[in-house]
Length: 369
Ligand SMILES: Nc1ncnc2c1ncn2[C@@H]1O[C@H](COP(=O)(O)OP(=O)(O)O)[C@@H](O)[C@H]1O
Ligand SMILES: [Mg+2]
Image 1 (cartoon, rainbow, N blue to C red):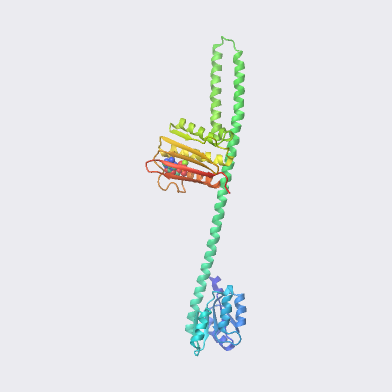
Image 2: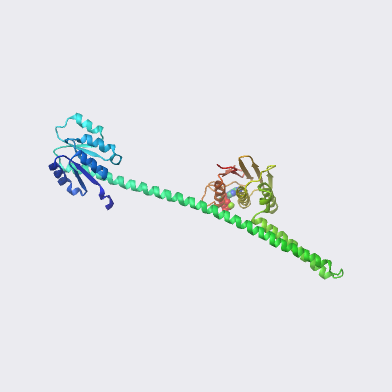
């Protein structure tokens, strides 16, 4: 706590002998004592340094103690510095009140009793030091809060960047698989057709072999399509969100046997890539949760796109989301959905209706300001 030893004490008295006497009494308080022999000099001191407490003679020629106190209080730096007036026993009541008006903290009547003076001073020093500790702690906390906010922002930006890189990469790989492998397989099929047409009719074994090669190629074409659209469905980029959601829902029903009723807008204006990607990925995540957790037999999906916003509602008739799961930091899937939506100025609400399953509402504004 050595940094606190800068608790200066200002002693103000026009009589040099009094100053020396005060200095003697406070010697072992162990603080830096600053002496001033006039109100003007005291003012110069408070402009330069901070003081834990000011001890000031009330009666001084020129600017007296009360006047000086007022000026000290007027300065921002010393607005809250405690002032103790030293007054003669003959001071009358009215001048004491004058002192309180300018913000005196205390009076000590002369002649001074060293023990009383020292214990009073000790109280103010303690106060000053506690204040300094508090001020420092507040500043540290502010700094930590600021750093926390910054790192949170960085994390968000990083997560967003990661997501978009993943999305670009998926799109690229999906196209490559679709185009390159698709073309090669089509080429193979054409060559095989050519070959088959030249095979003599009586070559039953060879004809049988080409038939099974045809089947293999067709199966592979199907697989390539499935893998490519699993990475990023073509329909999302070519026709748009509405069609992609319909396609995904049909695929979901086929794979899981869970009935999926979809209501799509009759004409959904083409949304930009960021919004349709976000909504589509959130939709996929919601369906995955239905299969994994809900134990549902039916899902209802409603997509509405109006002038201002996109609203996607997904309701299942399963067991409902357990309490505390929605806000849990461990629910990374839900966290990711909310994060995706909030990056576009939107939100994801999840409601549990007891005995009626889960309902998720995804709202994404189309023109955020
Ligand atoms: N449709 C749902 N029905 C019931 N519970 C759900 C549903 N969706 C999510 N949950 C619950 O919320 C939790 C968090 O979901 P999520 O963040 O996607 O994580 P994960 O799917 O990896 O467990 C799940 O573990 C599950 O308990
Ligand atoms: Mg999940």
